[in-house]
Amino acid sequence: MSSSRVGLRLAACLLNISEARRKYIVENIAKAALLDKNGKKHPQVSVLNIFSDQDYNRSVITIAASVDKLGSSVLAACLEAFQAIDMEVQEGIHPCLGAVDLVPIYPLSGVTVEECGVVARSLAEDLVRHVPGCSVFLFGEADLPEKRSLVQRRKQLGWFTRRDVSALQPDLGAAPARRCGLTGVGASPYVMNCNITIDSQDMSAGREIASAIRGSNANGLKGVQAMAFPHEGKIEIACNVESFDDQEAAEISEDFQNVSYSVLGDQFSYVSPHYIEAQVKKLASDWGIGTKGRALVGFTPQECKNCAEYGIKENIGEFWKIRGGVFM
Image 1: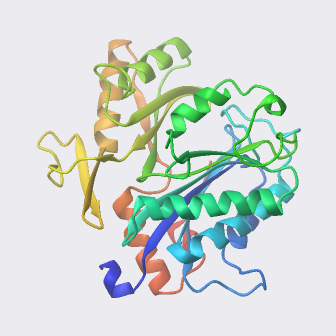
Image 2: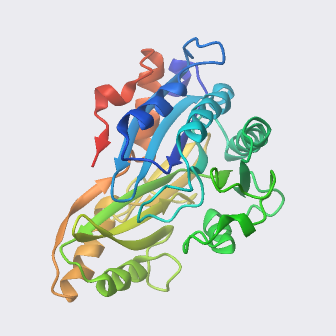
């Protein structure tokens, strides 16, 4: 089904919130995305998926909408999240800086990354206007003119070490309040989340494996960022898998390493989750360790587009209930 048949220009937000242990709160945040300020249902918005991890105490809510409706929908979800989540008492093993930790906007069909950047910037301004104590850092196409990547911004802000946020300097808003923390808002080509569990509690092995597949390393996987976390008595290799410009790519590369797709004629590629899992399995075997499976947090870019088109065409706001949210 093409976006032209649906008649919509679609974008998505993979909203990262610092709550997973209270399921009703996560679902209330998801439901808030479906209602306008008068409490009426948005006809062009669908919550495609909820992925919650209790060890991490983090949820990713996939919200898809027409690009002109996405900002207000995500704003409503964020307002609900800020009311319900207090970073002064939040606990979890996953790094985070904010109650609403990350608000990335991605193009799905008929929309440019630059347009998503405009949506993200406007959303960031609305957040600091409507939420007392909300502070925002910008990344990607919302961070003009530098367009610094999310990884760059996180390193600059100490996201990986979870330091005291009150000393941080936001791009928008006042100094971060301890309850709200600091929220990242930006736009880029689609970033997928893929986690592989190794059958070990050896964090040194996990860190070595994560480092080996990281795209910033010479022999790593392009566009892949990876960290190792203790998770349910094992080690999880958590990967952010970026889409990158690839104008000469085939739909699937000969070695099945990369998968390609296009948005408005722009060609992007990303490393296949199957290939990432195979590489982790190979590296783990060098340590005498097996793997226990792979979890995709939501969708590939193509799956997200297809589900968004179907959910919005059929007016299915709570699409995640049909698909089956993942609560770990």
